Length: 128
Picture 1 (cartoon, rainbow, N blue to C red):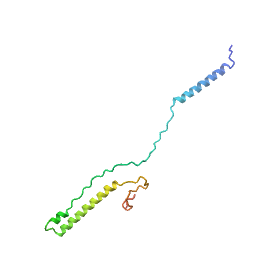
Picture 2: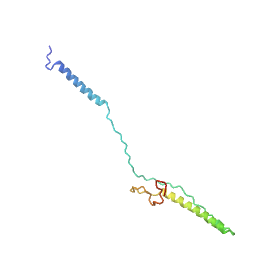
Picture 3: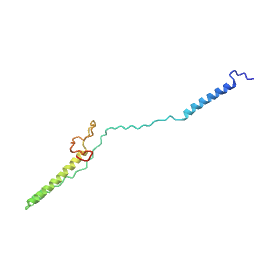
């Protein structure tokens, strides 16, 4: 007969439990741990060189009109008016180029451009 004091059924159950524990441990090792990937947005001010397009300086027409010996007053007034419009357009172009390259204070949280006044900035509804 069998001299085993534990018994055959108990020994088989112990082996079955041990086998299940080993298989469960191997099953846990078979699956790679899940990694959670998250994206974090960090806003850092970066210094960017400002490349300004050249603004062409207008040529004056008034010296040519004044240099003519018999220039009429109307021709002189028209030349002055044309020069005024040309210089105003030139000044607006210079302001636009200068405003595009205005220094921005990184500590300013309002988003306003330095030197800008509320009457010159357009509002969200399209009115000024």
